[in-house]
Length: 421
Image (cartoon, helix red, strand yellow):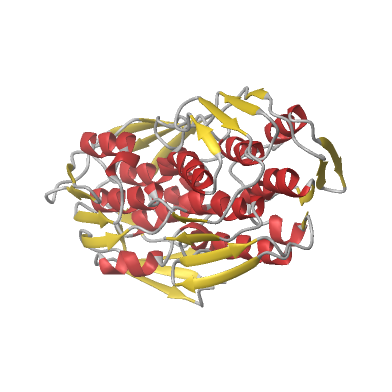
């Protein structure tokens, strides 16, 4: 199993380019199931989860062609099955996103209940509730969701909690339903907005994305389209936090500053000088140690839960005491125990983590526990005396394209032992 060996070093300095957003690309890949005409995508990141989705779609009979390093064309016309098997779905919760498109366009779906990072329950009941409201027959049997409908009907669907994948699944399903579907308390994340843009390019009639109410007027069919996936705001934020935590100066290009308002505010509170342009963000600590910040995770446009672990790593190295409250997932402090192995001072009280910063940490063998926590451990290890060995780094390959190469480009001492996918 692959490992990273990370050496403690000085400030990270330099420039890296953001990849396309994993959390936007995954639902957009699944959107290809809605049409019998091709969907051409660019800025698609090279990741484990993208490969898994391509395998899943190919297994269904979708023609998936890699037309460039970050370009993919998909054609669902030759689809041969409506089954998403456990062996592919078990590693990635986003696989549930084939459910809505399959029922809408093909009339049925048999999708294994998903797996993924062990950071919380993230049940699919809201997806199923919405499909039922649209007239689908749903049964759960043998670990599979069985859904069928001769034709979905427009409906008003109110989510009792905000769900990103639930919003995406039902928005896709509604594009081909009879009549209007209204999604209330919808997720507002930029990745939801990007999916809506792609669907609109395919001929869907959608309005209100980015707000809590999304309206979709069903159409008879979607058509061929091209779409460029938006930049990955979490990858961008990760490298910016790494620059701040290591007292360095880091610029991330090929990104969009408008995607990271809440994160940039916290970086400024940590003492970073933040500069932005049309497609770049730069943080400069001017050699100073960061200040501890308080974090309260919330659905967008609040502070993203996917940036919580990285800021905990920063707080471990900051001046003062930082308090982090995690309100999205109930099991997302697993990285804290690994940070403690590096000498961090962290006290966990339910959904709150209280961190007292240290000037440096100390190398130790540690283990990645989930995707975003993995990046936080690399950040902390770069400010630890000695060489830190990080095991189970396959988590990073699920969501960060060539993370070791990008950290190395900033001057980080990091090498992989083993082979990448």
